[in-house]
Length: 224
Image: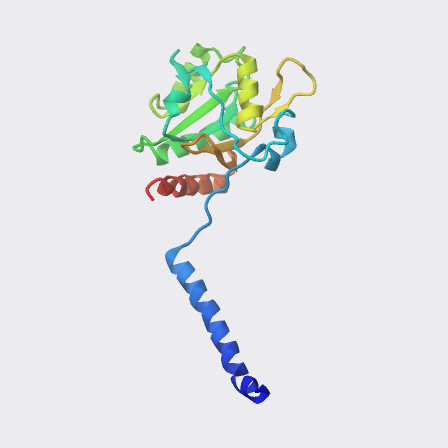
């Protein structure tokens, strides 16, 4: 019996190696990819998440909202129902990362300009400065398309809650207790179920390429 196994030992090793190569080739040919993760508060940098939800490990979704866009129109979750969208936080007077983020968001707009299934949503973190009129000027200057991309303002509390309790996207400002926010370069990819499916550096061209790829990947899952 021992001689039998020794005789076929080499054959078994070769067969095992061939099997691995064949399986790897099939995966490569079919371009099998892992699905995008669904982010929960417990799996995100604690600095970006409100302390009241940091423990949450499942069922996290973007909360309902009612904000005003660059045209004075009320924008709610209904405007994004059954849509995939990219969200971020900015302010129009920012001279550091915001111009780069806006330019890169405009590139995402360009890539999906003819796709009504993909939308964009930018929230100001300085609503006391970014009035409807100010947002309109900014939108016009940056090439924002009204039917594709909303720049929104509202109460500071609602924007703070959305940023920290829904999108998990900004840091709390330790120097103020009045819903102060330190915005980040994060772009968030949101699916049709209002779940966060990705975080991307809105100032990094490589991350923008990945975001565009992931939007296409996410959209493809709704065709299955």
